[in-house]
Length: 117
Image 1 (tube, helix red, strand yellow):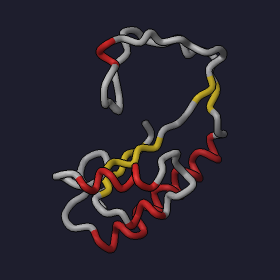
Image 2: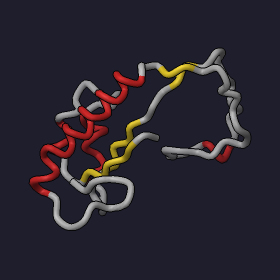
Image 3: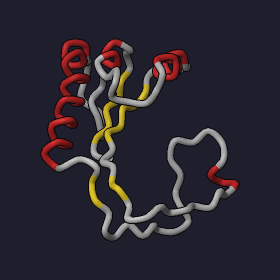
């Protein structure tokens, strides 16, 4: 994970259209929870030399965003999908898209690991 931004308002997320794989109803759903909002997470993706098959364990089932794998995966020789300069530019653009609106509406100090919006 390269960055995480806590987002408590829908408006900044409109700026991310086309930069994620979720349909808008899936983006809006967390704003209907008791504690509305979500976390935008920027990931650096790497291409493996060959696919790795991960067994489907019962503890991986259910509604989970992240799971801890049983063993480390062999990732030696993998290469980043985006060049370092391209990734840095896109990460800057993501931060700007979220903070452009956030700075004007944020109250209080920035929480650890992300900016409140």
